Length: 259
Image 1 (cartoon, one colour):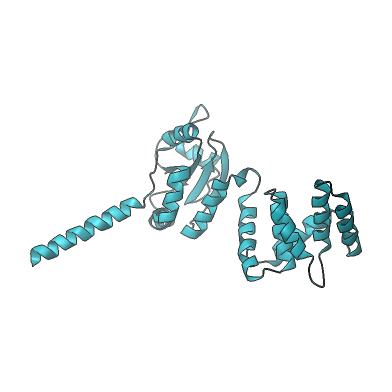
Image 2 (image 1 turned 30 degrees about the horizontal axis):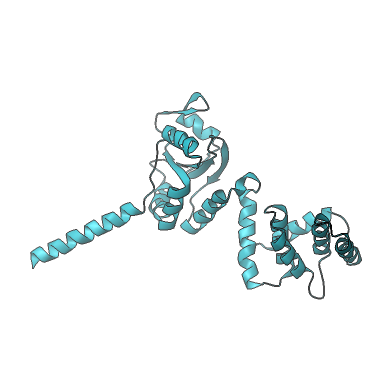
């Protein structure tokens, strides 16, 4: 009986160990990471930590042990862990730089910090502090998409928040206009932009800014008649200037404090 209990305990321990190992990031040393990122044309993710940082340990045990996070990092990133309080040099852009100086150049002011570098080693952005798995997954998706070259991570977070809010309020004119703006200006998805703009002009108080953006879309399609029609409706409904479009987007963002 005791032998059976012992065997069961051993099997459970092995199972737990395998499960834990399955969901752990394959961390590289910084110089190896820079080399691999260039060779594999992948973004390099550097986790800056210290031995005394409790939030670093928490992020290691939660976020960096999350199945989905580990899967995304393994597939699309080169992952590096770096303690800048330990001795060592980084061979960066042809120069040997002490870890502490590399930390400063990476705009790290506290721990933990997650820094993303392009495949050629250029700094993209630094994200300070602890991040929960779901929040971090959204960050990884942002870099996976390649949008970092044209859209800041803050704007991407706002866009994702609008996407969630529109599910609850699918006919909200302001949310639709803001999403139309993102699809139009950042993603060049004119069909989705048009769909959202058209929802923004429905109802008793159609948005003049949405009419103007529809006029721009039709002008781009060489549809002069339709463009002129939307332009006239924009003026009739109170459109003032192109500046008003950007001011309206800023106002919508400000009014949605949940972002």
